[in-house]
Image 1 (cartoon, one colour):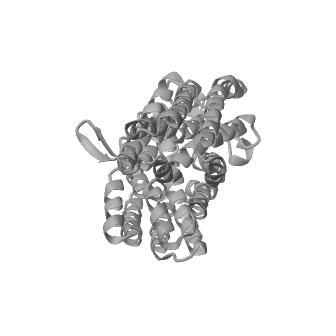
Image 2 (spheres, helix red, strand yellow; image 1 turned 60 degrees about the vertical axis):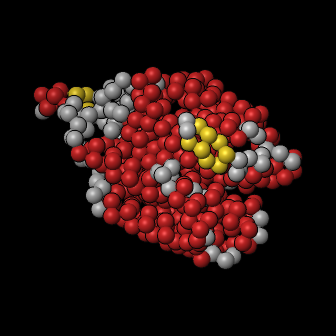
Image 3 (cartoon, one colour; image 1 turned 90 degrees about the vertical axis):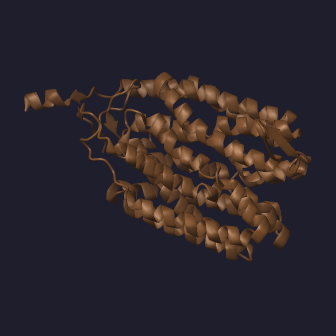
Length: 433
């Protein structure tokens, strides 16, 4: 049954919420390489075992599906028992998953490793984003964006070291060493995580907030949820393809090892793109989250999703030039990564804070649904002989999602808010008591 929020606390928020936000960012940075560093391992795995890139990318799909589709269950455990134990277990699974990757000598074992790592990453990701939504109801977009930025930017500093270890000692050593290190940090930081008390935080801000606290069973019966889910899937596909296939795309464009110089820094095009993409993929999350706190969620979606569509089309046309490949892939990630701040914050605004971890986790499964389409990008490329069809399909979905934000999602959410009761200030409740 829906629990109405009868009061809104107007006290100043506790300063320790910023510490909780920082801890969440650290945890997210430690699991980022499971997704964003994966592309570095695809070609070495194929060169050693000759399984084929499409077969190897199935492990990436399994990872994303396991990471996303179990988040609602993990979110339920967080809402019930707190964030500490869930993140600790997640850290252990992250380490185990990458150690298994280092030992995998068959596709089934590689797939199991992807599942184990995905479960661990999902436990950490869902918990940290949900905790940010709870601690910062007045700045949801920025807080969720900064937390998600840890996942987007966390691999930026380690892309070059991982690449160097792969070249010098083999991909197996890279999997083993970085897996253990990242898992240990997550486990240690988890000991300091905690959820806010229900009466600690204000519900204020420029944007309208829900006056109801919906459980997931109620949320999935609303049209708003399914519209957001569809938009999330459409937006996630293009970015996941770029994340998983960036190295093969660069190789097919024949520019992977060509040098690129920007602002005095010279690196091979693929290495440069991977590092720059992680930075932009991180920056976009707090930036567009902050922007959405001020101008509205749907307006920000329209701007960002449209930028993503334009970036993909430009990459299709100019990506064979190494300099433009680096610049445009950065633009693509800048227009994509914000979905991980905009959709959770919109979910929190719409369905309330109390069950935010579970609800945002259920919405996050859209990423897993989108991941099922990633292997088809390789199939389409083989069938057509180029990446252009894949780019056009992704750009079209992004453009459609941008239009839906203003013409479908915005009026649906407004109608839903108009049907909700008006919250009572704490002072009035105490006066009547």
